[in-house]
Length: 253
Image (cartoon, rainbow, N blue to C red; front, side, top):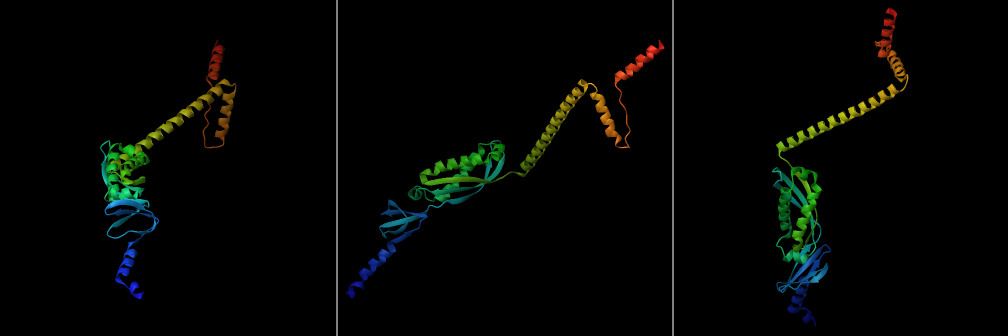
Protein backbone atom coordinates (compact mmCIF):
# COMPACT_ATOMS: atom_id res chain seq x y z
CA UNK A 1 0.00 0.00 0.00
CA UNK A 2 2.80 2.41 0.86
CA UNK A 3 4.41 1.56 -2.44
CA UNK A 4 1.32 2.71 -4.33
CA UNK A 5 1.22 6.15 -2.65
CA UNK A 6 4.89 6.69 -3.19
CA UNK A 7 4.91 5.70 -6.81
CA UNK A 8 6.21 8.38 -9.19
CA UNK A 9 3.12 8.10 -11.37
CA UNK A 10 0.79 9.10 -8.56
CA UNK A 11 2.99 12.01 -7.65
CA UNK A 12 2.98 13.22 -11.24
CA UNK A 13 -0.82 12.96 -11.41
CA UNK A 14 -1.21 14.99 -8.21
CA UNK A 15 1.19 17.64 -9.49
CA UNK A 16 -0.63 17.87 -12.80
CA UNK A 17 -3.99 18.30 -11.07
CA UNK A 18 -2.63 20.95 -8.74
CA UNK A 19 -1.04 22.84 -11.61
CA UNK A 20 -4.28 22.64 -13.54
CA UNK A 21 -6.27 24.48 -10.86
CA UNK A 22 -6.67 28.12 -11.86
CA UNK A 23 -8.32 30.79 -9.74
CA UNK A 24 -10.50 33.42 -11.40
CA UNK A 25 -11.39 36.39 -9.22
CA UNK A 26 -14.82 38.02 -9.08
CA UNK A 27 -13.69 40.95 -11.26
CA UNK A 28 -12.24 38.64 -13.93
CA UNK A 29 -13.41 36.30 -16.65
CA UNK A 30 -11.39 33.47 -18.17
CA UNK A 31 -11.24 32.81 -21.90
CA UNK A 32 -10.51 29.10 -22.33
CA UNK A 33 -8.91 27.50 -25.40
CA UNK A 34 -8.65 23.78 -26.12
CA UNK A 35 -6.04 22.77 -28.68
CA UNK A 36 -5.93 26.42 -29.78
CA UNK A 37 -9.70 26.70 -30.31
CA UNK A 38 -11.98 28.86 -28.20
CA UNK A 39 -14.04 26.69 -25.88
CA UNK A 40 -15.93 28.93 -23.46
CA UNK A 41 -15.78 31.87 -21.10
CA UNK A 42 -15.15 30.78 -17.53
CA UNK A 43 -16.87 32.38 -14.55
CA UNK A 44 -15.10 33.26 -11.24
CA UNK A 45 -13.94 30.46 -8.95
CA UNK A 46 -11.49 27.55 -9.09
CA UNK A 47 -11.37 25.95 -12.52
CA UNK A 48 -9.40 23.11 -14.12
CA UNK A 49 -7.30 23.95 -17.14
CA UNK A 50 -5.32 20.95 -18.31
CA UNK A 51 -1.80 21.84 -19.35
CA UNK A 52 -0.53 21.20 -22.86
CA UNK A 53 -4.06 20.64 -24.21
CA UNK A 54 -5.76 23.73 -22.79
CA UNK A 55 -4.90 27.33 -22.04
CA UNK A 56 -6.70 30.24 -20.48
CA UNK A 57 -6.36 34.01 -20.57
CA UNK A 58 -7.80 36.15 -17.79
CA UNK A 59 -9.59 39.40 -18.67
CA UNK A 60 -10.26 42.17 -16.17
CA UNK A 61 -13.86 43.39 -16.58
CA UNK A 62 -13.61 46.38 -14.23
CA UNK A 63 -14.06 49.93 -15.51
CA UNK A 64 -10.79 51.30 -16.86
CA UNK A 65 -9.73 54.91 -17.35
CA UNK A 66 -7.47 55.68 -20.31
CA UNK A 67 -5.80 59.08 -20.47
CA UNK A 68 -5.80 60.24 -24.07
CA UNK A 69 -2.69 62.44 -24.58
CA UNK A 70 -2.71 65.91 -26.13
CA UNK A 71 -3.91 65.91 -29.69
CA UNK A 72 -3.08 68.70 -32.14
CA UNK A 73 -6.33 69.44 -33.94
CA UNK A 74 -7.63 72.11 -36.32
CA UNK A 75 -11.16 73.39 -35.88
CA UNK A 76 -13.63 74.09 -38.64
CA UNK A 77 -12.58 77.76 -38.70
CA UNK A 78 -8.87 76.78 -39.09
CA UNK A 79 -7.71 77.40 -35.52
CA UNK A 80 -5.10 75.06 -34.08
CA UNK A 81 -5.89 73.71 -30.60
CA UNK A 82 -4.58 71.00 -28.31
CA UNK A 83 -7.11 68.69 -26.66
CA UNK A 84 -6.69 65.91 -24.13
CA UNK A 85 -9.35 63.67 -22.68
CA UNK A 86 -10.04 60.65 -20.51
CA UNK A 87 -12.13 57.72 -21.65
CA UNK A 88 -13.89 55.26 -19.33
CA UNK A 89 -14.70 51.79 -20.65
CA UNK A 90 -15.14 48.18 -19.58
CA UNK A 91 -15.00 44.76 -21.22
CA UNK A 92 -18.52 43.53 -21.90
CA UNK A 93 -17.51 40.34 -23.77
CA UNK A 94 -14.22 38.79 -22.64
CA UNK A 95 -14.05 36.36 -25.57
CA UNK A 96 -14.30 39.13 -28.18
CA UNK A 97 -11.78 41.28 -26.30
CA UNK A 98 -9.24 38.45 -26.60
CA UNK A 99 -10.09 37.04 -30.02
CA UNK A 100 -11.08 40.10 -32.08
CA UNK A 101 -8.33 42.55 -31.08
CA UNK A 102 -4.71 42.06 -30.07
CA UNK A 103 -4.48 44.76 -27.37
CA UNK A 104 -7.84 46.35 -26.66
CA UNK A 105 -6.42 48.94 -24.26
CA UNK A 106 -4.03 50.30 -26.92
CA UNK A 107 -6.73 50.03 -29.60
CA UNK A 108 -9.22 52.07 -27.55
CA UNK A 109 -6.62 54.79 -26.94
CA UNK A 110 -5.75 55.07 -30.63
CA UNK A 111 -9.41 55.06 -31.66
CA UNK A 112 -10.21 57.83 -29.17
CA UNK A 113 -7.33 59.97 -30.46
CA UNK A 114 -8.48 59.68 -34.06
CA UNK A 115 -12.10 60.35 -33.18
CA UNK A 116 -11.16 63.43 -31.13
CA UNK A 117 -9.28 64.97 -34.05
CA UNK A 118 -12.14 64.26 -36.45
CA UNK A 119 -14.79 65.63 -34.07
CA UNK A 120 -12.77 68.79 -33.47
CA UNK A 121 -12.46 69.44 -37.19
CA UNK A 122 -16.25 69.39 -37.58
CA UNK A 123 -16.96 72.32 -35.22
CA UNK A 124 -15.77 75.90 -34.85
CA UNK A 125 -13.75 77.14 -31.89
CA UNK A 126 -16.78 78.84 -30.32
CA UNK A 127 -18.81 75.63 -30.58
CA UNK A 128 -15.91 73.62 -29.14
CA UNK A 129 -15.65 75.87 -26.09
CA UNK A 130 -19.39 76.28 -25.55
CA UNK A 131 -20.60 72.73 -26.29
CA UNK A 132 -17.90 70.61 -24.69
CA UNK A 133 -20.40 68.12 -23.22
CA UNK A 134 -22.15 67.57 -26.54
CA UNK A 135 -18.85 66.96 -28.32
CA UNK A 136 -17.83 64.51 -25.58
CA UNK A 137 -21.08 62.60 -26.07
CA UNK A 138 -20.49 62.52 -29.83
CA UNK A 139 -16.99 61.09 -29.35
CA UNK A 140 -18.33 58.53 -26.86
CA UNK A 141 -21.00 57.36 -29.32
CA UNK A 142 -18.53 56.97 -32.20
CA UNK A 143 -15.92 55.13 -30.12
CA UNK A 144 -18.57 52.90 -28.53
CA UNK A 145 -19.98 51.84 -31.89
CA UNK A 146 -16.52 51.24 -33.36
CA UNK A 147 -15.35 49.15 -30.38
CA UNK A 148 -18.53 47.10 -30.01
CA UNK A 149 -17.14 44.25 -32.22
CA UNK A 150 -14.23 44.05 -29.76
CA UNK A 151 -16.56 43.40 -26.82
CA UNK A 152 -15.87 46.85 -25.34
CA UNK A 153 -18.48 49.15 -23.78
CA UNK A 154 -17.51 52.84 -23.62
CA UNK A 155 -19.12 54.38 -20.55
CA UNK A 156 -18.03 58.01 -20.78
CA UNK A 157 -15.63 60.40 -22.49
CA UNK A 158 -14.56 63.65 -20.83
CA UNK A 159 -12.62 66.44 -22.52
CA UNK A 160 -10.18 67.49 -19.82
CA UNK A 161 -8.48 70.52 -21.29
CA UNK A 162 -8.51 72.65 -24.44
CA UNK A 163 -5.29 74.62 -24.97
CA UNK A 164 -5.36 77.62 -27.30
CA UNK A 165 -2.43 79.51 -28.89
CA UNK A 166 -1.31 82.60 -26.98
CA UNK A 167 -2.41 85.04 -29.69
CA UNK A 168 -5.85 83.43 -29.74
CA UNK A 169 -6.10 83.78 -25.95
CA UNK A 170 -5.41 87.52 -26.26
CA UNK A 171 -7.96 87.83 -29.05
CA UNK A 172 -10.63 86.08 -26.99
CA UNK A 173 -9.80 88.32 -24.01
CA UNK A 174 -10.26 91.45 -26.11
CA UNK A 175 -13.49 90.07 -27.53
CA UNK A 176 -14.83 89.38 -24.04
CA UNK A 177 -13.87 92.90 -22.88
CA UNK A 178 -15.61 94.47 -25.89
CA UNK A 179 -18.69 92.37 -25.19
CA UNK A 180 -18.79 93.59 -21.58
CA UNK A 181 -18.48 97.22 -22.70
CA UNK A 182 -21.26 96.72 -25.24
CA UNK A 183 -23.55 95.32 -22.55
CA UNK A 184 -22.70 98.21 -20.21
CA UNK A 185 -23.61 100.77 -22.90
CA UNK A 186 -26.88 98.97 -23.63
CA UNK A 187 -27.81 98.80 -19.95
CA UNK A 188 -27.00 102.50 -19.49
CA UNK A 189 -29.07 103.46 -22.53
CA UNK A 190 -32.00 101.36 -21.33
CA UNK A 191 -31.79 103.08 -17.94
CA UNK A 192 -31.87 106.51 -19.58
CA UNK A 193 -34.91 105.50 -21.62
CA UNK A 194 -36.75 104.36 -18.49
CA UNK A 195 -35.77 107.56 -16.66
CA UNK A 196 -36.98 109.70 -19.58
CA UNK A 197 -40.30 107.85 -19.70
CA UNK A 198 -40.82 108.37 -15.97
CA UNK A 199 -39.95 112.07 -16.25
CA UNK A 200 -42.40 112.45 -19.12
CA UNK A 201 -45.14 110.78 -17.06
CA UNK A 202 -44.36 113.04 -14.10
CA UNK A 203 -44.45 116.16 -16.29
CA UNK A 204 -47.76 115.09 -17.77
CA UNK A 205 -49.28 114.57 -14.32
CA UNK A 206 -47.99 117.92 -13.04
CA UNK A 207 -49.26 119.80 -16.10
CA UNK A 208 -52.68 118.18 -15.99
CA UNK A 209 -53.32 118.86 -12.28
CA UNK A 210 -54.19 122.42 -11.22
CA UNK A 211 -51.65 123.81 -8.74
CA UNK A 212 -49.50 120.69 -8.85
CA UNK A 213 -46.61 122.52 -10.48
CA UNK A 214 -46.68 125.25 -7.82
CA UNK A 215 -46.72 122.67 -5.03
CA UNK A 216 -43.77 120.93 -6.61
CA UNK A 217 -41.96 124.28 -6.81
CA UNK A 218 -42.63 125.02 -3.13
CA UNK A 219 -41.40 121.52 -2.19
CA UNK A 220 -38.20 122.07 -4.15
CA UNK A 221 -37.67 125.44 -2.45
CA UNK A 222 -38.17 123.79 0.93
CA UNK A 223 -35.56 121.16 0.10
CA UNK A 224 -33.08 123.76 -1.09
CA UNK A 225 -33.57 125.99 1.98
CA UNK A 226 -32.23 123.25 4.26
CA UNK A 227 -28.72 124.11 3.04
CA UNK A 228 -27.73 127.76 3.68
CA UNK A 229 -24.93 127.68 1.10
CA UNK A 230 -27.35 127.31 -1.80
CA UNK A 231 -28.52 130.20 -3.94
CA UNK A 232 -32.20 130.01 -4.76
CA UNK A 233 -33.34 131.07 -8.20
CA UNK A 234 -37.11 131.40 -8.63
CA UNK A 235 -38.58 130.37 -11.93
CA UNK A 236 -41.78 132.25 -12.75
CA UNK A 237 -44.27 130.94 -15.26
CA UNK A 238 -44.53 132.86 -18.52
CA UNK A 239 -48.19 133.53 -17.82
CA UNK A 240 -47.27 135.79 -14.90
CA UNK A 241 -44.79 137.79 -17.01
CA UNK A 242 -47.35 138.18 -19.77
CA UNK A 243 -49.89 139.33 -17.21
CA UNK A 244 -47.49 142.07 -16.05
CA UNK A 245 -46.85 143.06 -19.65
CA UNK A 246 -50.58 143.33 -20.38
CA UNK A 247 -51.06 145.37 -17.20
CA UNK A 248 -48.33 147.84 -18.16
CA UNK A 249 -49.73 148.29 -21.65
CA UNK A 250 -53.22 148.95 -20.23
CA UNK A 251 -51.82 151.47 -17.74
CA UNK A 252 -50.01 153.41 -20.50
CA UNK A 253 -53.18 153.67 -22.51
